[in-house]
Image (cartoon, rainbow, N blue to C red):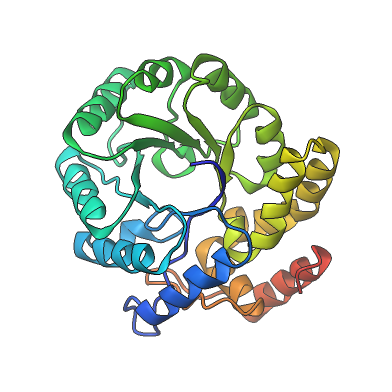
Length: 287
């Protein structure tokens, strides 16, 4: 996986059910605007609010509708459900699995490394590590990542820490696997630090602009890539740190994307937040 990936939101109807028709439409909406691969059932997809069966159904719909690779989020808090979900994702058509660090309980680096080795041994698809300390309260250190990068079934890592120093340390120690930036605010800087691409919540609402950042970097114009990225930082912060998934879905609907509604316990954003998001879209040239 390289280039721009989108951790695809899961459209829900007003009763909280998965809206499969909107999901199919959303796959077309983002891929028509330059996205290189899709990541259903990640953090931005509200995956922790989906059952195993619902995740499988979402992956099946996305894989059937997509003409780009599918990297499915399959991580759960424990080993058995993660392996089960990963096997079902492969059966549903996923090309690879994105496995978040186990959450809820605290685990040391040795335990995390052993967990990933055991998951990779148990499944028949490439496994991508996923470090997102904002939600799991643990970050994968470069040392264990270097060790895991030598496993024949570990293909890469999504680093959502936003920590460029950690990203560079990881790149130096594990340069021969796919390193993906998980923060839209540092996408261009991460590419300059050696990342192969990114998986960005921002790409749900601005797939065209995020794709342009990557294309400018690939064309050798790092300055232009960073300048465009800077234009997107305020919007990215609003749809992640400030308003989260409900804000992201509201901004997507403003751009005509079939985002659906958030699932409870999330609540849709209020009118003041919608007005702020509209202004940020306008400031970024996306209205």
